[in-house]
Image (cartoon, rainbow, N blue to C red; front, side, top):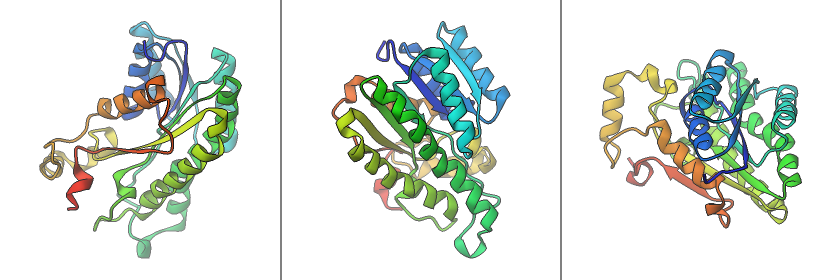
Length: 253
């Protein structure tokens, strides 16, 4: 019960790392405010949380639009009475239209930035005041190892958005630290989620061979790191970046 009596808001809660975090946080005592653009997926997460004895509520939300984020946070607070944890997990990686800069289409760039970067900004803008009301809280943001290294197969809108989250996180950690707000970044490597499904099994096997630990991450690997950052066990950690990549980044390959 590491999150007993806490309320956690999770974006992108409908599948992958967001769903894994919702289920894990709930098992550890948190009440879950699940946000996702996909109603069916979000409601499935809530159903699974309730099946295991937890409490959760779903609010449909496209994080790229501030009015939707504001409304979802307002409704979540009205439902559970407070917020203690913000997990900025929603994101998109579109390999079929996000390329190197010379092939970048403005519409794609803007939409990726809206979801991956403006989304966390909006969640923090409207969520941090709720955390402050509770005497502090934890903000966790999912970035990517793509923010730390270059790849020949570029997705520059994705990479730039994830890199910007690092600077945003540092600012939040400094600006709101005196109000007991902690802000930390998780850098996942390749995670076996629906986002990676298009790679195919052979490509995933090849990628795993380049990871020192010899496998892709599972969504639960990221969720457990988020759990630590959400809990009081990390009470003296802020402005940090944690790589959950099986050692991929340190290979330099």
